[in-house]
Every structure is written in structure tokens, then in C-alpha cells.
Amino acid sequence: MNTNARIDALQLMLTDLRTRNEPIRHKAAFRGCQPEFHALVTKLIEQLESELLEEKQRQRKHGNQTSGY
Image 1: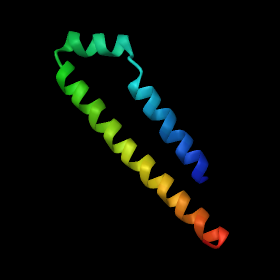
Image 2 (image 1 turned 135 degrees about the vertical axis):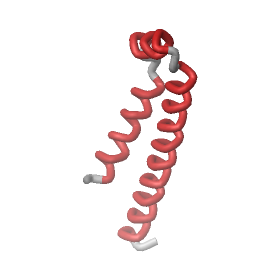
Image 3 (image 1 turned 45 degrees about the vertical axis):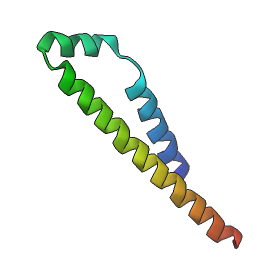
């Protein structure tokens, strides 16, 4: 996968997870699993943020190696 495409995909997914999706949140509340739902969203955001940081570091490192620094 293209590195820039991976970074774009990670950023889009994070934006989507951070956007309040009211129908889904209402469904979670109705089913009585809102705390679990929120915990899972938080965990996914943390995981994706970590992957995004790693990917950006890899890209920087690769860019420095190809430019001779």
C-alpha cells in the first residue's frame, strides 16, 4: 500500500471515529452497552493514532534515507 495512502486512510478513519454518530450511540444506549461502546471507540482511536504516528515516522525515516541525510 502506498505510504501516503495509508496515512490518508488512517486519518480518515480517525476522523470518522471522532465524529459523533448519533444513531449508533443511541442504539448502544438502547441496548445498554454505551460504556462498552465508548471504551471500544477510545481503544480503536488510540490504536489508530499509534499506527499513524509509526507510519509518519517510517515515512520521515525513509525520506531522510533517500535524500542522503
